[in-house]
Length: 529
Image (cartoon, rainbow, N blue to C red; front, side):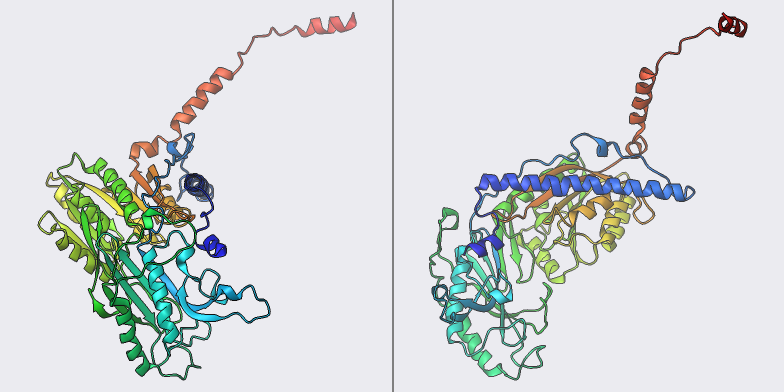
C-alpha cells in the first residue's frame, strides 16, 4: 500500500502545511529562477550574434526587471479547500491484482485475479486498488469494486498491454458531487481482435451479453459504501450517488486514443453537468475539465480579478480564451462582468460543442458577443485583432486580454508568436498545470528581446500565484500574468545602470596632483656630489 501511495501521492507522509511549503520552494527554484535564467541566455546569444553579424543583429541590454533584486516574486501558495478525495475524474486500468493474503507465504504461488485500478508499478507489477490513495474519491473506489465483481464472472479476459490480447482496457469515471451525477466510460479492444496478430478469439457474441450485464450492474443500485484503509475525512464522506451515464469506447490502437475519439452511448444522460461558481457546465466524456472543482473556483476567481484590472474602466473589452475547452474560464469571466465579449478557441470540435451548449445553459447567448471556434488559435486571433483595429479607428477603443490554459505540453510556438505579435493584447493570464516544464519555454518566448521569428514588444511577468490543485502530489497549478512592455521601457533598459556606473566611477577617480619637473642640470650635479 505504501509503495502505491509513494508513487501516486508522494507527499502523503507530510503534513499539509509542509506540503505547501515544499511546493512553494519548488516553484521558486524550478520555475521563477529558471525563467529569468533562460531569458538572460537569450540576451547572451543575441550579443554573440551581434558581434558576428553587426549589420543584421543588434545587442540589447538586459531589461530592468531582469536585474531587479529578488527576480520574479512567487506569492504564497493558496491551499485547496478540499484536501481528500477531491478528484472528479479518475482513469483506472484493467489488469491483474495480486491478493495480499498470499504475499506472506513464499512457497505458495500468489493468486492473481482480474481487476481494475492504478498501475503504479508498471505492467509487471499489476494493478492496485485505489482505496489507499487520499486523492481518490470513495465513489471511484466503489466502482472499482463493482467492476472487479463483474470481471470474476466474465468469460472475456482483460486486455494485456504486452501481448495485446483481451478486451477490457480502461475505465474512466467522472463525477459531480454537486449535481449527484456519475459518468462511466469503458474502453475496450475490438471484440474481433485488434492489433495483435496472435489473437484468434472472437468475443463478438459474448461481448454483447456482457455489455448488457455490466450496464445493469452499474446502474441498478446506488453505489455501495466502501471500506478504506487509514484515516477517513469528512471531505470524502459517503453520500447517495448513482451512475447516470454509461459509455463504451472501442479502440484497437496500441497507445492511448485522443480525447475526441468517438464513444458509444449505452445508458442514461449523454453528458455530465457540473456547477462551478455561478456557472453550470455540460461535460462530454472526453472533454477537459479541472479535476478539483472546489479549488478550480479559487483558481478562476484569481483569473477574473486579473482580467478586471485591465478591463474595469473600459467601455468595451475582449477576452481571447485560448485552449478554451468547454469554455469554463471565458464564461466565468463573462458571468462576473469582467469582459463584454469572449472569443474562445480550441482545436477540439467536441469541446467547442460543449462550450457553445454552455453559453445557452448559462443564458449568456443574449449578452454581448460570445463565440467559440474550433480552429488553430493563431488563425483566429489574427483575423479578430484585425477587426478590433478597424473598430478602434472609429474611436471605439477596446481592452484586449488573453487567457491561456493549455495542456501539460504547453502552447504551440505559433500560438505564442501570435500572442506576442498581436499588439492589441496588453495582458496575458497564463494558467499552467506544468509550471516547472512547458511554462518556462513559453515564458521565454513572450519575454525575450524581439527577433525575426518572434517580433513585437516583449512581455514581463508581473504576478505569480501558485494554487494547490493537487494535494498530496508534487504537482501544482500556477497563474502567471504577463504585461507588455512599452517602447520606452525596452529602450531605457540598462541606461540608468550605465549612468549610475559613470557617476560612481567619477566619484572614485582620484584627483591628479601637479608635480614640478626637476631641472635635469640639477639632477646631474646631485649625482656628482
